[in-house]
View (cartoon, rainbow, N blue to C red):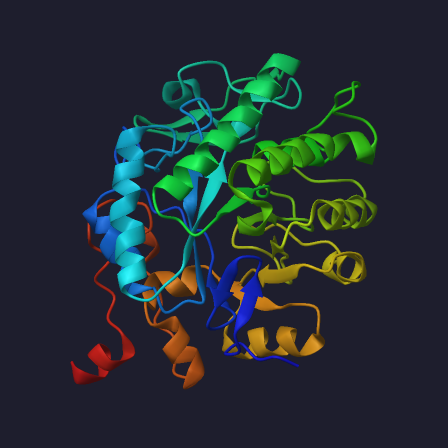
Length: 362
């Protein structure tokens, strides 16, 4: 069986190891969603990852509902992301852009209009806005014209990602955002060709992947899912047949890699996972599978030994351990992260975590 430190091919991407940096929203952009030099320094520090998956990045103003998160819909954002991709490449790394439409989780204060979703629903809990937390508002069901327009936004953002120097893209299909809102029957109550049956619920994802693949080449496209956990009000009543059918569709589309946020214990938000779907997807999908969710060195090695995962993506450990790959290689202890600075803005808790060598020297 391959180890975490063996090379891996993900379509057109050649990785030196199988340790990926999972997408991590950090809110260090600005209100215009333009990346900056501070973000470039942050990502470059973590370039030893086999692959960096960028923080979730809006494909449009309508689809971006997190304060100070970045975008990829205009020239200023492309130029800002060039700072990041250049810094990562100079440090020997590889980076893909995660493309994000939040659907019903976009508050009008940020998106500028009523949010759109698979169906007329309201997300639970509260939205983050520049004025603090506010209740979500009811989303309207996407029309056919909306669907065509949003799919076009995904394709345009993918082209912009390549123009910005990214090595590829990952579609955000997880965590209760728009693609997930179409996929799972806990949020999709449509009765047309985008709802009801599994085949119909796969349609929006399929059309997004086809459009993005046509725009930049399918060998540079991946997608993320969260199949076995309730997240932001979205779940499915029977996830195994859904994700088995999804695996077959990905095989047909020749999508080269996927990332599964497949929780194996209760999440930090208290959600209890259902049965893993990766064992049911693996026989049906020949592409590469990265598994994610609360892994450390020993648990990652155990999952790799099972023969399902081709690699492991680490989220929070990369926040406070910029040299995570080295620490895992030498079985060094991992530094804890400061939760209070995860979304605080500025350099503190962002680019000031020491490497193992720096910590030992100090």
